[in-house]
Image (cartoon, rainbow, N blue to C red; front, side, top):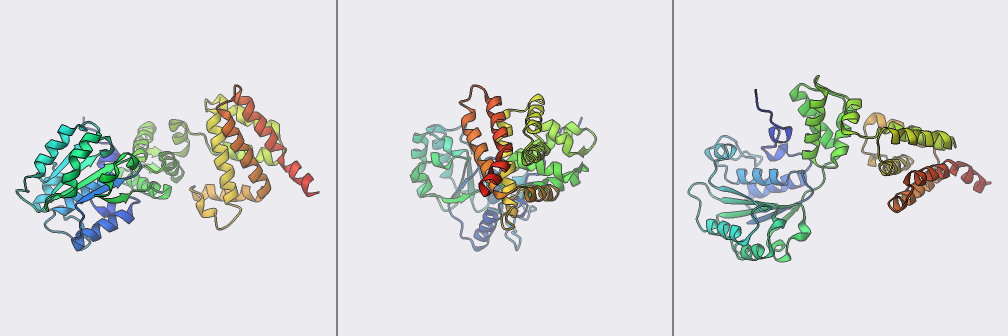
Amino acid sequence: MENFLVSARKYRPALFDSVVGQSHITNTLKNAIKSKHLAQAFLFCGPRGVGKTTCARILAKTINCTNLTAEGEACGECTSCLAFQKNSSVNVYELDAASNNSVDDIRNLVEQVRYPPTSGQKKVYIIDEVHMLSNSAFNAFLKTLEEPPSYAIFILATTEKHKIIPTILSRCQIFDFKRIETDDIAQHLASIATREGIQAEPEALELIARKADGGLRDALSLFDLVSTFSGDGRITYSATIDNLHILDYDYYFKITDALLAQDSSRAVLVFNEILRKGFDAHLFVAGLGEHLRNLLMCKDPQTVSLLSVSGKAKERYQLQAQAATSGFLLNALNLMNQCDLAYKNSKHPTLLVELHLFKMAHLPSLIAQKKN
């Protein structure tokens, strides 16, 4: 049986241009390589799964490439590139600081730095999860990081920049990786689905992208999960909702329609249906708050672009926003915020949510009375 390779590894970028959503960093690194203005220590920081280690490996590969392209990318064909791709490069060292965080581990690394490369121009040291190093390990690393040999380059990666001591930060060129946009993740998933021969509904891919919260690795893991769950080479919106146990935003439209119609009974019944399906009431509160926020964004053409939803969903938001006044949405948002803050301390959380739904259902009449 053929070994299954997860999408996060199978489609791991090999060039700067194939990195998703971090063009501000990849362009800077390519320019630095082309102009030969490379720093001797880099710090890549940002959330998990956004491409820090991937960019570190691409940079390490490109630095020693003997036949760079005009765009500053590795050729992938020279001896150095081939050795790197086979994980046999003698010029690239990777250290996982999460499991090798003692002062002895760093001393062994520093000892290796003393020896120049036998082939190639640079020796590249990638230290992942660098914030896990002990204080004594950081101190043992300081001198080498401040005055490294001309042939040594250090690339540090971390998800927790604030845990790194200032003396290390001051010796590094810092690159802040951002969370990847939902649209970028959805487009990348669509291209992978095409290459894998999977028929995927755009709404399903957008749902996976939103669930990943800016992390491409998480999105690819969810994509693998949903595609395995389907079993027929198709990824549908309904199957994605069932598999990932996500609350369908259609419920929020139903609740809001009931609130605008001042039908508190219908709103409470829909909420009760959500609870019967096993969803957490606090999750519902957060989701309804986000829904109301999206409706408020639709009230102004300038803020519609802030909605990270598909085209069909955006049309539906705009249609419902026309039926709601800004006063209703602001007051309803305020009530949802109060409910969210009070939820953890409530002994009857379901009653608390129902009470706020009743209050929101009476908002249209209260606003009309104030106008009169």
